[in-house]
Image (cartoon, rainbow, N blue to C red; front, side, top):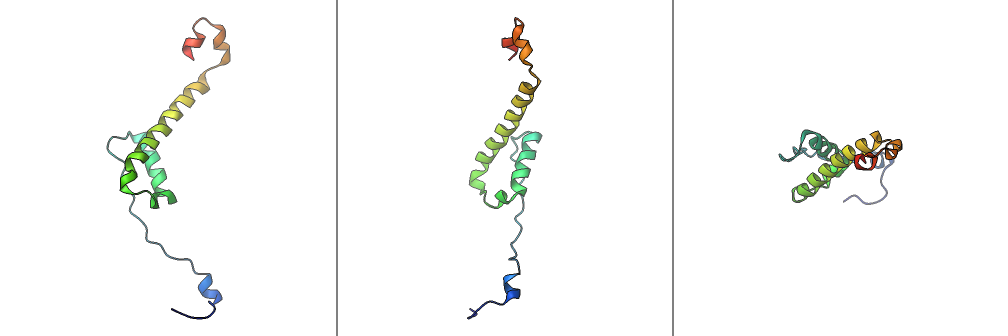
Length: 91
């Protein structure tokens, strides 16, 4: 171990980290859910997710896609439809 003060050059060198191979999405995920899986895994969060937590990540991917689908349907709904007889049913 070197003693004394560190040189300016040694302080400016970034540490090299080994790239982790990104695991493929679980088979039970849809292609859209698999895209969410890949986005999470290529982010820095992928370095922290262990194989024991893959089922939790899979459920997260499902929740994201499902909530996006619901949001799209809600975005298409217009409040004027409530004035119609079946407006609330459509909601």
